[in-house]
Amino acid sequence: MAETYLADTDLAGRYNIARNTVWRWHRENAKFPRAVRLSPNCTRWKLSEIEVWEATQIDAA
Image (cartoon, rainbow, N blue to C red; front, side):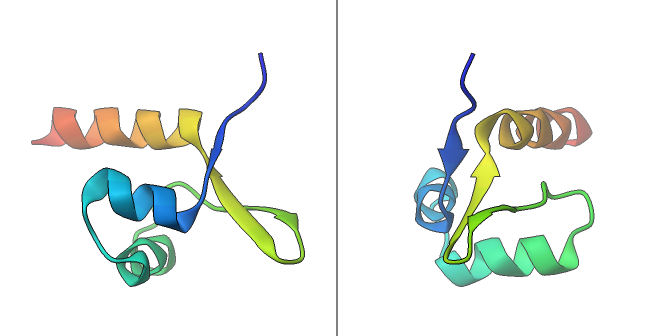
């Protein structure tokens, strides 16, 4: 099955936050999924890793 990738704008919309917050989480939160560089100007997050991270956030709450 093909992997689905999300842009920072997709994540910002998913969580109703600013794009800067996505990058801050990436930079400051070691548990937040790592971005994947698909090409020099294209960085995305794997949806499967985001969903796992979301599940851990729900379990921790």
